[in-house]
Length: 358
Image 1 (cartoon, rainbow, N blue to C red):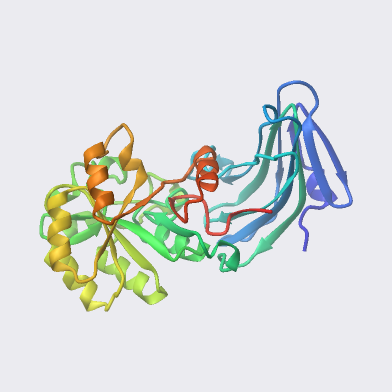
Image 2: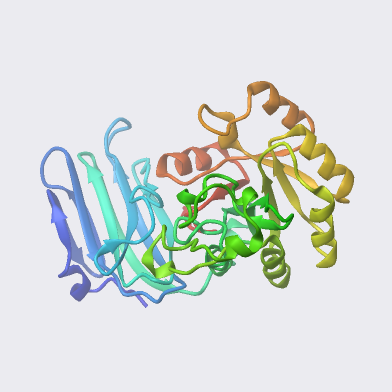
């Protein structure tokens, strides 16, 4: 059923845009020089996906920027994420059709499709549809999507709501950051200052599990997630094992109890597990303790900035047979990913099967 109706288009908000709605198709192009933007509300059901079938046309190789995205709100305010995340650039190449999918998380009560284009480009939306929970079609079978801390653009990273959203969106592999508490428990947390992701102070390594369980790890993301508690690795692995999810355990720092990790994996009979560890010493210890463990690394580690490894470490990781996986959250990154021909990606926002060009 096409949700793109005249009633929907009648609520369209535009800036410098020339629009035409005919035979169920909405076409958008700039009225004058420069960029135009259009947004219109859509009907949706939380925890399902919205499908957008669109065509991009460009006139000349150097002209015409075009993009489609989704704007999610709760009670009039943006819900959780950076407005740039999750957009798709439409490169056009004169004429190209796209099938795009956007995930609607719980907590959202307003959703809008957004269109942007500049002189030299036209975007036409052919249809909108409300779809099933996640994406399980064969079109993306060659691409492996890995959720970064769960679907953490829409829910508190490394918490059960983010993990559940990722599973509902169709992810079959999920990264969980893991650190050790003061009393030796493994919890899903990146080990950085607690004030960045909770109402606590200090670091998880300096608090007991009981103390951490008393903190709110959801309110910082959105009031909808108030009173979300920290997730233990055991809790996460139990959920993953029950749904056939491949866990990626990301470890920061130079010390980690590999034997405890092994015990929790063995207790649940998990056969495939990947570890992302920046420390060579930790990787060696994990390799000795955990049978059949595989190693992988997000490619963001290999650029300038905080928590990055050196070029020498990068080469050592590649030579060891570890998988180097690009991190893709912004439209420019998605465009590079598609053009590179990579077969797997790490993301916090794009859903499996969300970007298909014909």
